[in-house]
Structures are given as C-alpha cells and as structure tokens.
Length: 367
Ligand SMILES: Cc1cc2nc3c(=O)[nH]c(=O)nc-3n(C[C@H](O)[C@H](O)[C@H](O)COP(=O)(O)OP(=O)(O)OC[C@H]3O[C@@H](n4cnc5c(N)ncnc54)[C@H](O)[C@@H]3O)c2cc1C
Image 1 (spheres, rainbow, N blue to C red):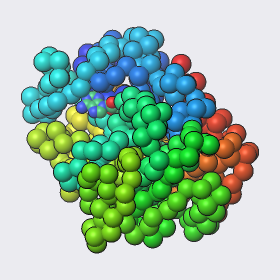
Image 2: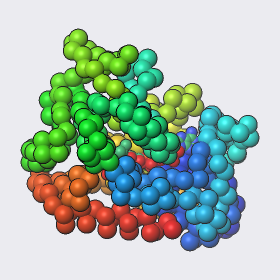
Image 3: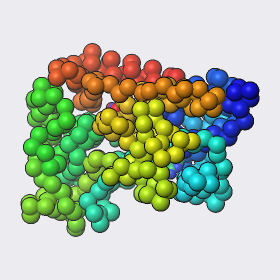
C-alpha cells in the first residue's frame, strides 16, 4: 500500500544543484523515475569545485558539467529545460518560464543562490550563475585579447574570490594583466584558519596578485570602484564573487523564509511551513546554519534522496547532521592547492592531486 502510494505521487525537483544530482541518481536506482520531473534552466549543471580549473585552462566545459538530460534519461525521469518563476505551495503548482505549469505532490528545491552585487550595480562580470559563466568568460577573454584589460579587480575575499584570482592570473600569465583582490575584510579568506590565511597571503605575493583589504565596495561606475568610505580604485573590469543572495521569486511563494530570503527547513531538510516541500544546498536555511558551500549541498544529497523516498512511503524522516569542521581545498592554479581543516593548513602538489581525485570521483558518479 505504502509502496503503491510512493509510486503514484508526482515529484518535482527544482534545480539541478549539487544535492539534486544525487537525488536523481538514487531515486532512479529505486525505480521511482517515472513520477519525477527535474526542472533546470540548462541541461548542463556546473560543478563549482572545478570552475577555477576551467578558468585556468585545465578543464574543458564538458569536464566540469553534468548532463542533466542524460542523467534523467538514465534514471527514467522527465527533464524540463526551463526556469521556475512561481511556486504556489497552497495549490501545489510550479509555474515555469515556458508558460507551462507542473502540479506536484512533493516538491524539492535546490536552486542555489544568486550573486549579491552592491545595490544598483549592473556592470562588471558576475561568477554566478556559474552555469552561464563560460559565456561571460569568453567576453572577458575578448576584452583581454583586444588589449582592453590591464587591471582587473576580483571583488570578494572568500574561497571563490581567491580561486578565481589565481585562475585568471594563470590564464593570462605573461600578458601583463594585473589582478587585484578587493574586499571589506582586513585579510583574504577571513572565514578560514589563520594558518591558511598566512599561506594564502604568501602565495598571492609570489603569484603577483595584489590585495586591497578594508575596501567595502559601494559601486562600480565608469571604470572606478568606489568604497563606502570614499576610497576609489580605477580598474578596466570587475569580476564579482561576492556573497550569495536568495532567489528573489521565493519571497512571493508563502514558504517560510529566513531574514535573507532563504527557505527555512528543519533538520530533515523539510520546509518549516510546508511539509510537502524540501529544500537543500545554498537555498536552504538550516536550523544550525553553515556557510553557503557546495560541500554541504553534496552531503545533503543522500539524506534528501532518502527523505523524499521516506516521505513518499510515509516513513519517519532522518535528520541531516552538518559537519562541524569541513575540509576546504583552495586551488592555486599552478599544480598546487592549499588544504585547510581543524585550524591546520598545508600547501602542495599532492593536495592538488587529492582535490583532482575528489572532484573527478564526484563527476564520474553522474556520467
Ligand atoms: C568560483 C567558485 C568556486 C567555488 N568552489 C567551491 C568549493 O571548492 N567548495 C565548495 O564547497 N563550494 C564552492 N563554491 C560554492 C558552491 O558553488 C555553491 O555553494 C554550490 O554550488 C551550491 O550548490 P547548490 O546545490 O545549492 O546550487 P547550485 O550548484 O548553484 O545549483 C543550482 C541549480 O539550480 C538551477 N536554478 C536556479 N534557479 C532556478 C529556477 N528558478 N528554476 C529551476 N532551476 C533553477 C541553476 O541553474 C543551477 O543549475 C564555489 C563557488 C564559486 C562561485
């Protein structure tokens, strides 16, 4: 009876994020594919851990993208290539940019986060959404090729910002393009250990990447970055890697959101306001919050898949326990990387090989 119900409830998965690819794989293996639809604006889902390697020229587009259409086909699921624009959790309907709608019995949302640029700023190049960054990288490359790029600012001192700075430096080696990392904190990667920061500062110095700390960017106008305290920096272009915001359309859904607009979930990843809605990855606001990082989305995948299955079978859901300490691997784009965990950090070639093995293993699972 429970098994029959499990196979009759329509399930909609919004977004082909790091958690949902595992949900597709696992629920497909359980033979639940026929009732599941995955919606994503692009059939190619990027794996962010390998983006710096793509920028530096190490990985091709295919190396760091999962083909969602092929993954769904293998799992017996329907793939719809479009964006969700409206969720009506009372009517249990999702409206799509294509004009169609999808009714659901169970909805799971893994649509990531959006770039948060200074208010009113539309110039510069945002790393997010990563899915379309390859196009923007081509624009940046064209600018560099035309000689229109002598100084580039990477705004954002998190791991994404420093990796992008190293990767661009590597990409344009010997072409006389200066790169400056800009942010409001006093040091790069303020959220990581002191040891990792010291190592990173040394590597930035060696690589010739400048750092402009305590620069809280307010705007980028006419080739000038302006800080809140009036400081200015003239640059030819800006790459934004600043911290993540919530997808705006969620505010009209009636789902319970936190103060930043992310979906509040309990420890089973189920919406606090709507028990037939799950959320995972950056878009979810956990009871015990963690930074917005792919490592959490990846770990949530198996728990989310299990809980969707249990929810369909009306079984008791299992909790997700976020790691209290997690490994961060920072690519230096020269064949080396920095590993940081438990307040200890180390740099080396073997760290980069280790990162490559972890990333490749993740990608192989969905090929
Ligand atoms: C340069 C860079 C490097 C990074 N490196 C690391 C790293 O090494 N380790 C780490 O842990 N984190 C890293 N991160 C952070 C990481 O990218 C995110 O935390 C991670 O991608 C979040 O995964 P997710 O599953 O929440 O969403 P995402 O992977 O962002 O996927 C969301 C998906 O949903 C789709 N989508 C969006 N809106 C809609 C909609 N309305 N309808 C349907 N589909 C939609 C998107 O197209 C996308 O495919 C990095 C980030 C950047 C920018």
